[in-house]
Length: 100
Image (tube, rainbow, N blue to C red; front, top):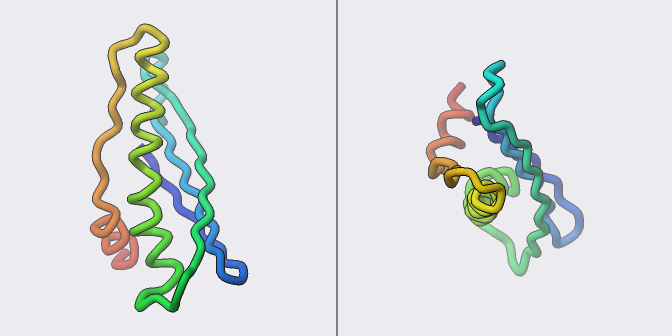
């Protein structure tokens, strides 16, 4: 599974684009999906962390459960066994990506 998070800010809004790709292998029997969700967050006051940190940690953690539920629902509706994406700790993912 591959997760890509992009952030952009405009005035008091922060736009987050979260892309989740599954099944990157050549296995024809593997489940392949690419889900893109775009969310807009409004800033009410100055935060103690950057837009980048908010987008990659908090916003991603808010959006990701909806992607998990969508994939699960699609697989069930298709008559497959439920496909449940793993839980992701976006704080740890951010720390790992900034360290490397």
